Length: 77
Image: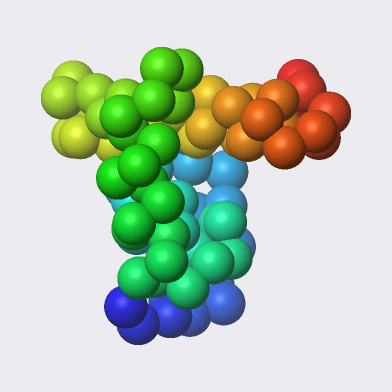
């Protein structure tokens, strides 16, 4: 996966609906490891599903909230 330019990252940082490639960038985990983890999480209850209506993207605030709850962070606003 290529790294987007700084301008692209700044422009897209507030997107609510993200593809898995953007999700992986936001998580900061190597792509191969992250894709395996996402496949595992998809089988678990509670992990945000991709929504057809939004182009098979996940709702980023729900993903962040899931991670915060699972790994002890504070809940997102």
